[in-house]
Image 1 (cartoon, helix red, strand yellow):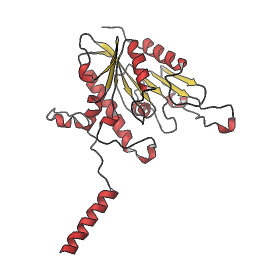
Image 2: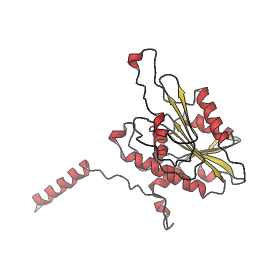
Image 3: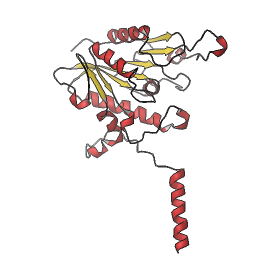
Image 4: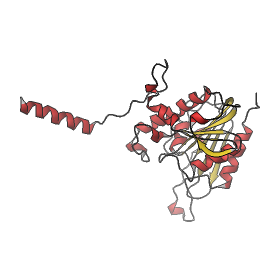
Length: 259
């Protein structure tokens, strides 16, 4: 009996090692029964960083002022988390344009394995799509949102998640350094204006180039699409004046009149 028990224990440990349990990818609770099911995805919202117009200090979603309704940008960070040299400057820049900017935090969730090699960790892509859908639902249920002016912006992995999501009701979407080679198709509704900002990945030495081709073709037939190419090899976009000008113009041009 002892040998049998030891064998069963060894088999259990082996299976646990080979097939680790991933977190349940649950969306917002439909019945509101338990905030325990603030679910894992809810942590990305409660752990979000927020910037509001006229105040450079970061806030939490619970600290957003409710005095008036303002346009909102939900900003999805890349695979390495909220970056202080790219994502936070973007959020502060957009807040200065008069928007509330919410940055959900994927790494506030229970599953924090790295995902910068997408083929090694495909479960994260589902998590990121879940986070943008959850964040938009929370935004629309809030007292501080101008619900005619809800935008989404993403960087790298976060941009891929937006591109691959069906997100009705968006005023516009901004895809910064999205992964052309990984995103097989654009799932955003056809009527949603899209701004693509990406590096052309060219260099002075042509043999060194890894420029992606056909990326803009994925948006064929979409009204309101604009593709801004930054010359050179890069990833972060905030430091480029052409990128900032394009984002500011896109947001202003697609803003619905206040109601």
